[in-house]
Image (cartoon, rainbow, N blue to C red; front, side, top):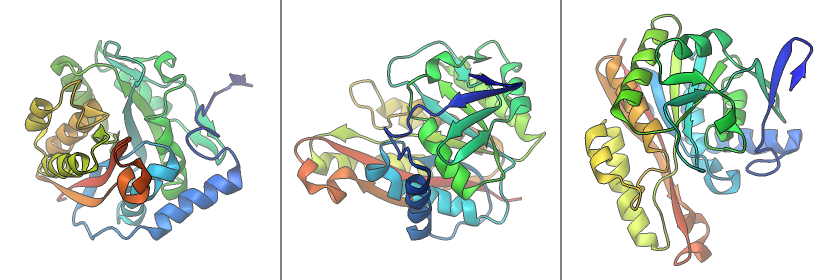
Length: 283
């Protein structure tokens, strides 16, 4: 939708995945961030992992990621949110175009210059709003960014495939962008979905160990469509590779819960894991 000369994108998930009322959303997000007590992390944060389920389920875990980002000594100028499409893949990477994404908290400013720079970096990255319609993986991170990093601009991207050429092109483009401005790459992912609470807990602990060890190769070997240890494997691999490209990177697990921990009635029915992690480099 166009309002004057400003192109406004509307947050589809308001009232669905997160509260549609401003005061309610503000109280929820600020409450999750305030309640989080992440461990101290040394170094400059360059990438992070945050879950994307409905806020009553994953919001408390996401609060750990954004508390760490809020309290970091150096804050990013631009947050590049990496999501994917739950409705099916597509070639390459789709960037949300426009000037702002409107949520109940107000207008989140999109970094138009950074978005265009990424789109110009290769044939597999393009500005395309179509895959973003109805997709929550990246969008669910936006109110948290608005609350924890209110001065940051946004680039919102959906990764449509896991091909090496797509990931290589994206990570290279992010590296080039990082030479021009201070960015934080935020990967949106939930963890294993399965009725078996013990299996989810055990598998997620292994997955988070691989993530914090920056072992993207083993993550890809252990992931497949019938065993999605990350519901968002492309964003996670891209974030790890970007962190490694910035120098001597280290990963830190901030928090883990699954829906069976907070909603025991879900055990034996459907359990979903949620993890918060960050990646830092020494300056």
